[in-house]
Amino acid sequence: MSDPTILLLAAGRATRMRGADKMLEPVPGPFGDQPLLQAMARRCLRAGPTRVILGPDQPERAALLAALDVEVLEAPEGAGMAASIVTGVAGLTTPVLVVLADMPDVTASDLHLLMALSTHDPRAILRAASEDGAPGHPVLFPADLLPELGRLTGDTGAREILRRHGDRVHLVPLAGERALTDLDTPEDWAAWRAQP
Image (tube, rainbow, N blue to C red):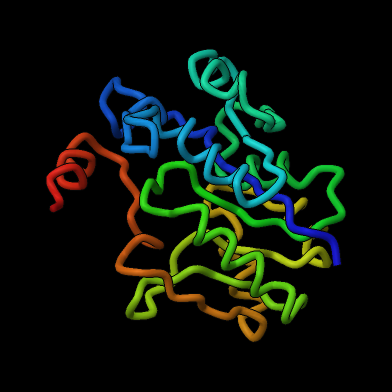
């Protein structure tokens, strides 16, 4: 079985940030604070080959990735999360690990765990969950689902594929709430930073 390709989805316009770009928000890293998108791309790269999907006309985000060994792809404007996934899977034959770039608590170790578990059951869809079992992200899809991922439309991502293949979905609990932490507003970021 081929190693999974990581798809880091970072094309959203972050409209709920009221003018700020959450992908540029600083997050703690091993060598000091760094912008969220850069931090997430580095975590992904530590786990495996990575494609980052941006939207059109996002030069500041693209600049953050220029020195990293990632493949940057551009999804069409306004076509939703499905378009990012469709763009990301184009031409691939490997399983894919879909990672949302606005989840700063997800670590490289979490990605390694999902990828390692996929070798034990290559047909399983592995979905990260909170410690108490609430389904979240990232999600690893086997290669046989690439055609379905490549036909997605709308802004619900791969939710329909997860529903259709529910018998193949295995939840993988991660520590705490890291599989659910999704920072969309300035208030979300303030609350996250205020945590001990």
